[in-house]
Image (cartoon, rainbow, N blue to C red; front, side, top):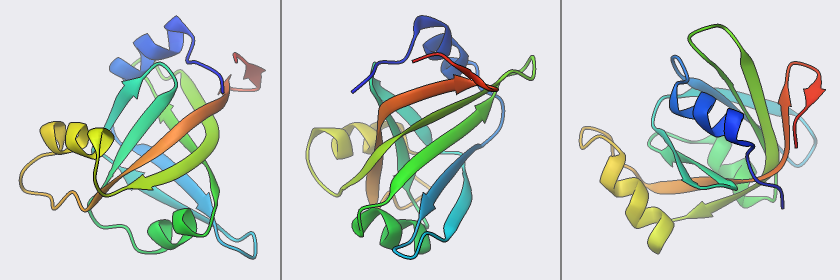
Length: 125
């Protein structure tokens, strides 16, 4: 498990617009979604609220790896790759329920555990 470099943590706090969460199904077919309800749980865990997942949920539950792509106001892009898990109870789920807007259901919290971090083609972690 890697941790997000300080520059990436700062960029995450200042990301612009939705992030792109990508998973793959059992046959390797990618599925990418925009996600606006996102947070950082700790230095090595990013969280996406499962408000309306369908294929994404199925992919996570089948053992998919994942990536999160985001961009900052100054148009610098970052990609975080790693293992993704599903939490429908416990401390990570409870934390997500605190910041996820009440208008969304927040069925579960998908956590991406950082394994690799890139800015463009440059590997940062």
